[in-house]
Image (spheres, rainbow, N blue to C red):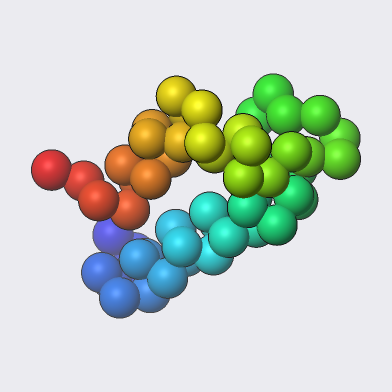
Length: 54
């Protein structure tokens, strides 16, 4: 809410892109990260839901 809807959306997309590029930004991932393989599991829908709220 502090960023506004445009910058807030870009912030969430940047967070998801960092995880897709194997950076260890998600809780509970290994130190090297696992990228798209982690996001393809059931957790991926939860993470994408950050960007597309109801």
